[in-house]
Length: 194
Image (cartoon, rainbow, N blue to C red):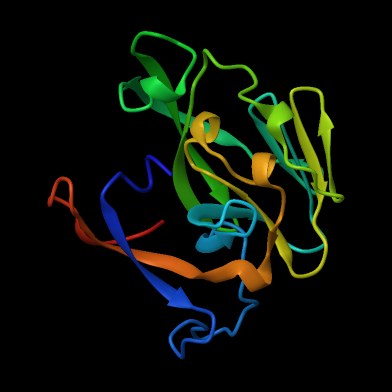
């Protein structure tokens, strides 16, 4: 989830049944742009990712382009940053640059990383999901009721709905709202998650 979350971050998660979860407007539990924690039932592990598409949405992610219901979600270039932490996940042997962009979904603005040297990182590894199909250099999903499509903010190094399929609402623990502390660096304390 870099650049939003770093290794060692401890986050506060508000579960769906929390009295603090709903807020003033009583919106639906799952919203586009939220960061959620969920149980991946296939791998039996907990994951944290960003909700990109909700029920009744059609989402397409191909060639580093994101479309929700036919509308391209624009991204604004911020800068280049050296990729050192993710080198071991890449087929690229030496350190290289990641592109950092600002993206906005449902009035939630956040940063993402993309690796310009990776064109299609394991799209063929999509776990079978009857609502998703592989397309040229990507995936297309029609999101049914009680499910959502998630992506990691570090797009080319994230195992997310492109690989695991759609996430069922029953597997969602809650939304991540604050970074309490970073145990690796101790320089991030109680920071709101964008």
